[in-house]
Image (cartoon, rainbow, N blue to C red; front, side, top):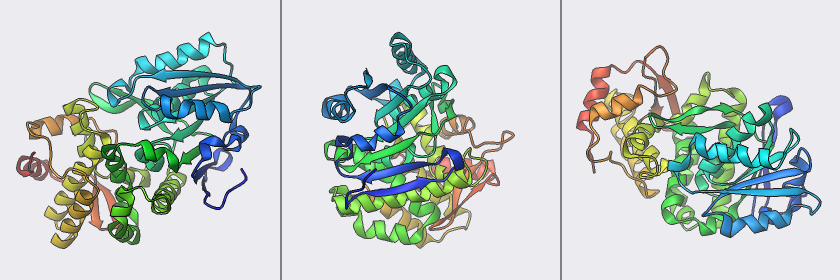
Length: 367
């Protein structure tokens, strides 16, 4: 696409399946954000009831008139990230007679992106799709890397596939309609990148958190670009999470347990990850891996992003362990946790004694 001065383009390097991440303001209004990545003339936009009134017409008007453009509007919320809702996408594609050269466009947050990606991966054994993330969390995390799927009552994202998009189009202007709570949930994934791989980025976030929470465009663009670059590099190295990609799950083993136990949507994903990162950092300190000062700094960054540090009231250690044993990173029934060697340096470990983990869960503050 022809870039404007404020645009940034990164690339997820996956050989023949490489794709761009376009970041800028006003990209939804530009046909060249989408046209180069369409497989044919059939386009199905999938969005939700919250996003549709803001951006569906804008996206439709950006697509050439000769295309056959349809739309599916799903209910909004993590509790609707189900195979039944993906079925509505399949139904719409079949009823419209869409073929293997159709393209799906995911217009929304991470729930929409994950479901549309799974629908694309499985419809006629795989069709093209484009990610148009409209929340900070999806812009810096779920839209990049090709993880798609739905939740199961017993575990988050347990049914799905790896299926890469043809492009990711990040229009920063969509964040102007994002509630503050959702913005903070997205910041959980942003600070995660600093914790796992880039101490300098973490220090930058500490200095710029107020500007980020006020959605100052230049600062937000920098945070999104840096986050996406770190994730793109990790995905290029380990697309299907056989090794280093698991580091992207810092806080997620605890966080997914919270989400599943509390009921999807009651705690936002980023809120659960925020608390989960604080728990992982606390365990890292108890194991002697990070200093008390590093733990204090970790919690301060999480709190400054507007995220919780405590676990839910009424969630027992057994509740945590039951859910955590279903985590996808586990191998041969051994719990694998992402922990911190230092700020900016994470690792995956299955060496934590279950007694140590249980003691952490027993003692960890609830609220």
